[in-house]
Length: 143
Image 1 (tube, rainbow, N blue to C red):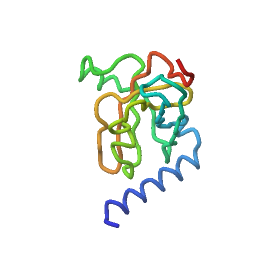
Image 2 (cartoon, helix red, strand yellow):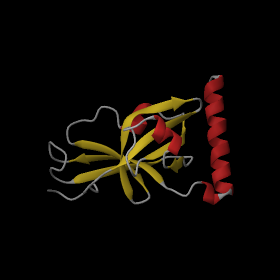
Image 3 (cartoon, rainbow, N blue to C red):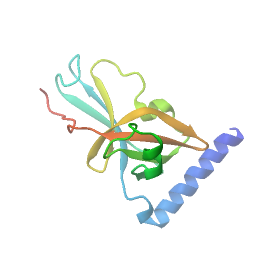
Image 4 (cartoon, helix red, strand yellow):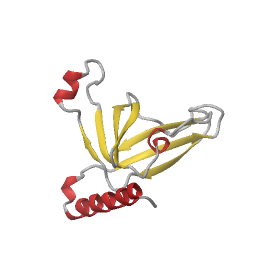
């Protein structure tokens, strides 16, 4: 392991300890969801969800007013920024990567569903992701 890998592990451990010690620091359960459908396209047949909890729990918040003002049109009402995501994850863990036919990828925060907007931003020892609430709740029932 290199220095960066050691630092990532240390930062993740510290974040996890802080969150465990002060529960109100991270109020949201954050999951990525890979849904695969038995049919050849999304919504066809039955579905199976593979949920992955993001640990340590990342920070979830609306974009700051200065960010919204600095980038007109980039943010919509209800968008969220999720940061302090472990740098041990890859971009594909956050976006689903290239999805096969009959698969979809989204995030679940508490009981709301979101899609990634743009590319996740890799920062020093963490990721930051912009999420947009899905207009329709994804359905796990066949069409």
